[in-house]
Structure formats: C-alpha cells, structure tokens
Image 1 (spheres, helix red, strand yellow):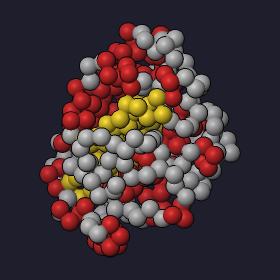
Image 2 (tube, rainbow, N blue to C red; image 1 turned 180 degrees about the vertical axis):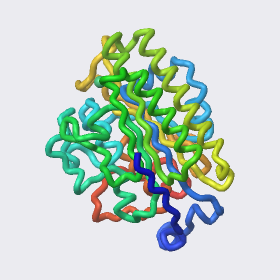
Image 3 (cartoon, helix red, strand yellow; image 1 turned 135 degrees about the vertical axis):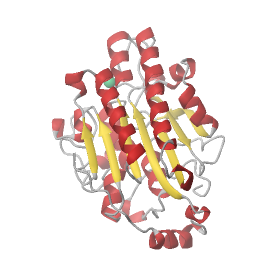
Image 4 (cartoon, protein in one colour; image 1 turned 120 degrees about the vertical axis):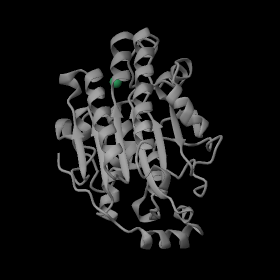
Length: 310
Ligand SMILES: [Zn+2]
C-alpha cells in the first residue's frame, strides 16, 4: 500500500470557483470532501423494504431518488464506468464486463480526473471486484494515479469477506488519513441476488449488511478529529437492479431502476431533479470539491443535489 499523503492549498482553486459560481462553498470555512459509496446490484424497491437505519439517516440529511432509470446496460462494467466517469457507455466504451477497449484515457474516473487536475488532491479507493482496481478483464476502471488504491479479491475471498476487509480498510483510512475524495465499493448484494434471487431473504439480508457497512463509513468520518471543520458530501448509488429470480442485463424496470443518494451539509434537502442519474455521481463529486466542469471534457452527468449546483 503506497501512501502519499499530501498537503495542499485550495485557495487558488477556490477563488476561481468563486468567480464562476458566485460563491465558493468554502466561504463557510469548511473543507469540502467527498465519499462515494457504490453498492452493487441494489433494487430501490427492496432497499425501501429493508431496515437500513444508516442510509435512512443519510436520506434525512440529504436528497434521495429511488426512481432513477439508468441509461447504461444493466451490467456492472458499464454501470460503474458510467457512475465514476460521468459519461455513458458510448463515450467510455465499456458495454459489458469485458473492459478491453475502454476509453478511460479520455474519460477517467473522477478520482483520477482529480489527480490530473491537481496532483495535490488526496484520493483513496477500495474495491473487491477485480476489474475496478486491477488489470483483470481489461481493467482497471480506477487508475493507478489514485494515491491509495486497495484491491481485495472478492472472487477468492467471497464477497462478504471482501466487503468486510474493504470497509475495515476504508474505516481505518478515513478516520486517520486525510483524503479529499474516496470511493468504497460493496459487492455482496449483487452476489446474493444472483445466488438466491432478487426477492430472497439472503438478498434482503445482504442489503441490511451493506447498510451496516455504510454506518461504519459514516461513523469513521464523524470520528475524524477535523470533522467539525469539514464538509463531507456522501454519495451512495448502485449500478443496476435485479430480476425477481436474480440476474440482470436486460431492460426490465427491476433491472433498470437504481437509486441516487446525496447527503451532507452542502446538499439541498428534499427532491432531486427528476432526471438525476448515475453519471451525476462523478460530476457532483467534482463540483463539490470546487472543480469547474470544463465543457471540453464532454461529461454527460450534471451537478445534482448540491445547494449551489443547480
Ligand atoms: Zn451481477
């Protein structure tokens, strides 16, 4: 694990943003930071039925839509690529779980884009599905320019154990290091639905467990000694749903319908724009960190949920 913790001054970035947005969120004197939590294969209708106190608390301090219809194929490769790059498959080039031929050089994940913009950003990612973090299947989606990238092998460990290790590592990092932007992937709900069905007890239980993971991650942020001086935007979303029998890749509402959750002091409470979508995750994360979205990047996501962003 390479750890390059860097200090940076964002005064210049902030002043440029202030000109563009007529007000930098940093004017409140808080340091903006982002945590994106991706949970694989979560149906919003099932999410609504499962006791999820941690996610409910985030919703109560934020904005949520469980009626997002993803425009990507309902497969993990295109789903995560769209969410983390901010463009749809036609641009990033990933239309299946074969990541070969991807166009991440032009459309990098949001953490790598941050590093390209300013290498002083401290970025962190932990995943347990191989193509997201490694060269498996033509990956990685998350590039090696990310300061700290941890890769557990869910296929080998089992995704319950993989998720446990990912979240434990993320908790340690988020509590004790100083990331500006982080991505944490939780994989087991997708596996539970494949193995037992999208209406099974195991699937419901896996989403309850994912919520416990979310609670741990939120607690880690709140345990930071500097938390009171920080403005954490927490974004939670998923790549696709599941059929009742388990499985995805098709166009049914159960597969296409996903959710978008934004939470934190900078989030406009209540409803999101009706056309909010998963590509908004990357763009909203960048905007929260004071990045002016350059039209030349041709991003398709928009800023969703932020007070100043809409
Ligand atoms: Zn799957």
